[in-house]
Length: 419
Image (cartoon, rainbow, N blue to C red; front, side, top):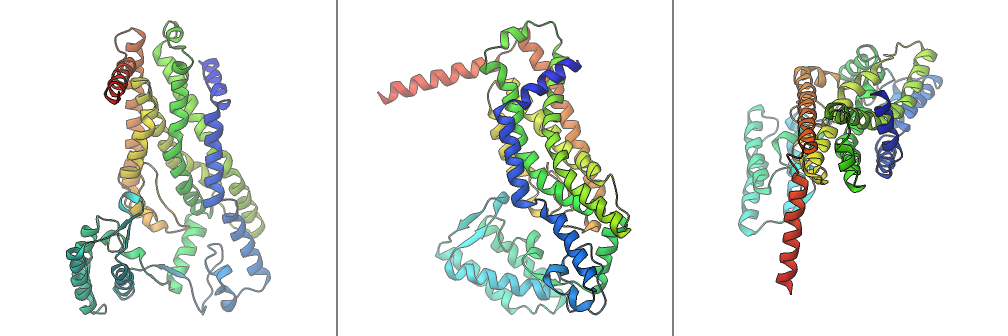
């Protein structure tokens, strides 16, 4: 079995699709994360301490959002966060909605995809009435916020969801100041509870999880389409090796090959943080990156790869790529929870911030269930794939050939109709 696993891995490593997949990972990594995140924070910490630190120095933008620096008392600012106070949220929402109303061009993100909406005259009147009601509300009166959210919900429904008025996203429209106490709480959580590296590991896995969810499917589909494209199906079907071993080793090979680049990309972060801890006598969680990689990224890869394998073996087509695309966009992207928490059906766990540990802890049970559900689905898909493959070897099923005949017949009919 080990020799079969090694053979499958070599085939994957030499394939153009796998090399392209690595290229996508590297581009996405450099554009969205890159080596600069940890390196800049470590460099900023060193400069801050060498310059004598202090409240005035801390308020400079270069140091303000550095999670490695302990916030001093008396600083002019401690940064900002997504607003939770209606005093900040309501004016910001009204201002943006009014601008969109004036231009009759509403930016929305239904299912995470940007879309511009233009309304007719009657619909514009609905927005105008909602804006009038919103402006009449006093944000300093605690009881009016629910009324404001109801008005927002009406406008958001009219726009198809994902607008500036989306009740679930109102907190992201405006910022409010972070207090010293909040800044210290965040610093203590990162330094002592997270062991520094866990905070960065979550951000790393947030970005890399998107790539795993969206692009690992290409490697799986290409590998399981290889036999058909090279007309090796009949030869493989006649082998004595069991379907369980053949499919099992192929699946493990694809998962391992896809997972490997993410592990390698984490190493520079790990080295930099280990050196930072040694040089500054700060305790670092040595295993944090590996824990998050295996808990967050691996289940994503297991599911995506299993889905690709199952549909490809069943249909002998690359249909899995389309299925996965719509699944990730419509269900599994977690675009409305990118800062963490509320883990539901997303295949890629989101935590697009350094720190914010409490949000994850508050939803830990959901997170655990989410990961185990995807692992369980992966196992089911693998077993179903083995069953289908066994039936195909026995000549009892060949959906791919039937689909091919249907498409060929449809193509001939279309040509005849055109003539």
